[in-house]
Length: 98
Image (cartoon, rainbow, N blue to C red):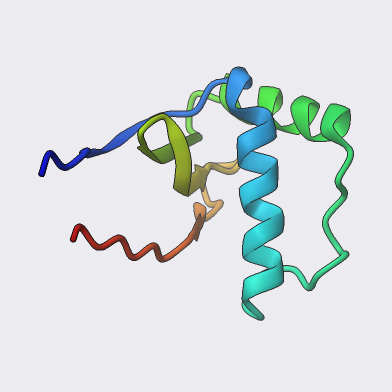
C-alpha cells in the first residue's frame, strides 16, 4: 500500500474557500473557538481578511494538506506594536494510515 504524505505549506489566496470551510467546520466541532453561526460565511469578506493577513510580514497561515485537500491549519498573526503578543489558532487532526 502506498501512503500519501501529509504536506505543510503556506496558504495563498487560492486556498480561501477551503480554509473558510475548514474554519466553519472547526467552529461546529469545538467549543473553544467561535460558536456555530458566529463566523460569517461571506467568501468575499473572508478573501479580504485573508489577503490582509498574507500581506503582513509578521503573520502567516500554514496548511496541512493530504492529496491536495486542506485538512488542518495553524495561524500566527503578529501585532502592530512591539509589545503585542502573537496569537495562533490550531486544529488537532488525527489521520491513520491503514
